[in-house]
Image (cartoon, rainbow over all chains, first blue to last red; front, side, top):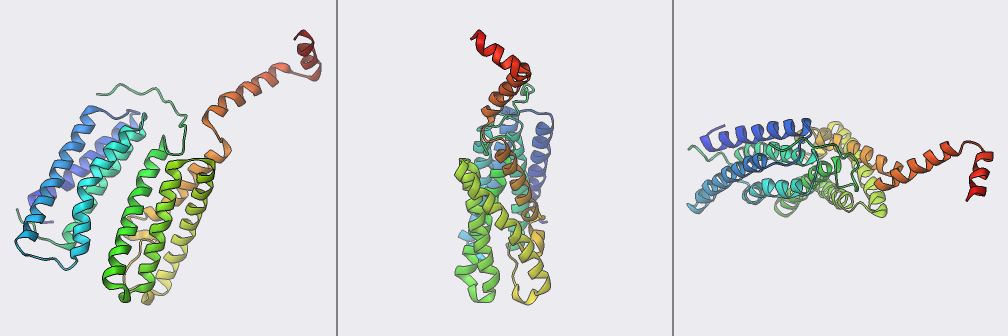
Length: 121
Length: 171
């Protein structure tokens, strides 16, 4: 894995998943600290998307452009969708949804860099 | 820190409680399988037509399961059981097929090698889906449980036929 931004996202995603799973195990519902952590992950993902869009704008192209664009659209939506869906839940299963979002964010960033390893920040 | 939640372990629909997590993961797979199939079919269909069509089929099954689990009406639950069953058969059949005949699958589907490319979640997901739906077919409505237990209590209190007649006379 290359670059500080993707590495930070992977660590943050896994940490969020661990935190959310702990909340599920402790039988807590959605909380403000958990939502704040989701917000941090969202900002990091938007930075990553921004860096890649800048690379595209400078004229560089990956082999699988369609897939890359799919990832660029899907990645920032994951934490938002998970937060909305999790907030509708009044039990421990709300944080469980957030745990999935954290894991998915980490996996998406790893796969994104298999498609196009461009970030060397 | 949020206060500990007194477990209200009576989800009132297939989309609440553990179902909230299930619908989220199903939604994820609905999106990823159909997006992947869409890209593959439009950009390089002739490369691996069987694999891409199976990906598209998997995408449709996941969409159906997500929507029906989220709706949760009796009819939707029946369609959900069907989707999860097709999914379980699909992942087992395609998993076996992809190992037995790798030439047909130059590119992977969601169900190749029993979903190993997706951490075997495609293999586990329909099992959890069917277990969750089975719980609902046993107990059609969450509030029905209270009524049923009240009836049971009444029957238990009623004891024999003689007691039942006694109560009727009093009324």
